[in-house]
Length: 352
Ligand code: TXA
Ligand code: MG
Image 1 (tube, helix red, strand yellow):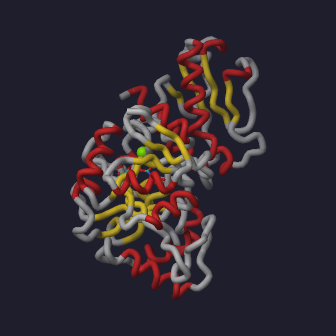
Image 2 (cartoon, rainbow, N blue to C red):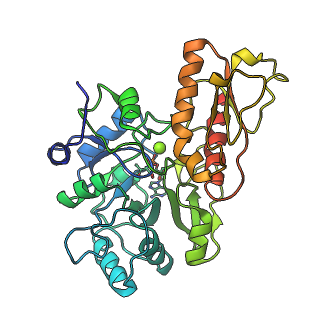
Image 3 (cartoon, helix red, strand yellow):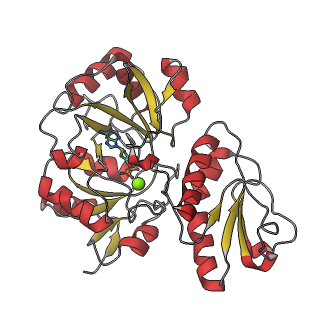
């Protein structure tokens, strides 16, 4: 199958209406989308990604269009001005899919949708089992990307979409990344440019009757807590609630060491390693084997560049026969927490 990359929203819509898959841009990462209400179309997502069926998908909803939507025409994240109107709209919009909408969830949705936030809520039966892996809950979000909002507004159904990478690998933040991994397996990638945030959405659900972060991501914990107060982190048990939390995930092919720049102690020469760094290069290793994510120390910029840099270094390792990628720990605040989370999981792949 030939994989085409383009800007044709009309074409993306027709393919999705015909039950086919289309890769779509979002502000976080690219998604591999299908009609969320069509179990057969959704099954193809698992096939193409080599994704195990115990890993449920996120359902992407339209922000609506026309004057009745307080979110229509929105080009970036931000709270809606008329609180009552926005909440009423969200309630009606979510009603077909969820049985219960707790106050904390409504508040978060109003504050951060469209945006890098996914809410896990009790689902109604219209969502097929294959989307939720049979769970009694469904993960939902409204993405903040103009092309995809326009696409969603045209479709009579929401879109189930996991990140558009092979299972366990690094998520794509450009259309070309999608083609690199899924080329030949899908017919169309809607190109919306590089993703502005670059990390998957933050997932919040209810654990023991209180909101908890199930996966760190593109919305800062600090912002969530400013809106609804302290939130817990879901305990990482043997059966993860959000398999994006699997120990080994987001992995490049080359071995990756997290919070460890001691390549010499591990027996590597400077000519054999690649480095992924926050603000400054490390003396002693050739500059072209290093990627610095944000010289000015901006964690948002670092997050935006993280996955592309991981891919680049991985490719460099393959091309030049470099043996390993060494990374440092980022400040444990803002998006630094999610960056550290992804790097830790990328490094776990080495030992399992
Ligand atoms: O930013 C994002 O979230 C991107 C874009 C495309 O929206 N999507 C994404 O999807 O990262 P994916 O499939 O790679 O990760 C979705 C995560 C999985 O770890 C899954 O387990 C979790 O969401 N999830 C989905 N439904 C869930 C549910 N009912 N309960 C708990 N976790 C759920
Ligand atoms: Mg993923």
